[in-house]
Picture 1: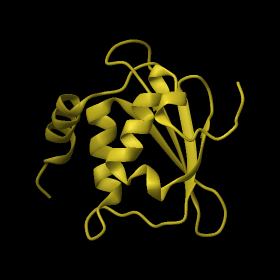
Picture 2: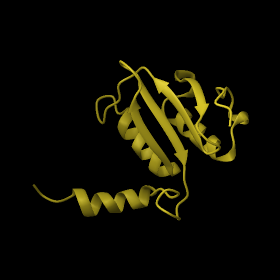
Picture 3: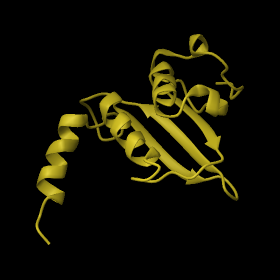
Picture 4: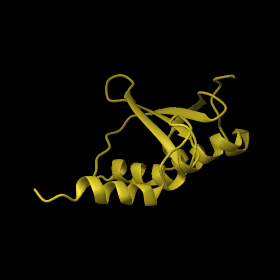
Length: 118
């Protein structure tokens, strides 16, 4: 697997194309440089940005899109003021490392885990 940057969706595998679509819907491909394959199913890129849950709701939108599209998202530091994003398209069923919960699953988790009164 070459880690040569991918410049077009057409150059992606079927699984990578799902990740590409998530990037497009989340922040726009035009805002991301050097999208690289990690495997035949994964893409990664670095961003010079901050993300949060409300005022600049990029983190919330990313989490909701990840569940809607069943894409695992990994965020790590990539140097001062840089964020590395690794995306891995998953299935609704399967082993722990192959599946990802959808929006309905997220709603159920939210209802059971986070709606308790303080």
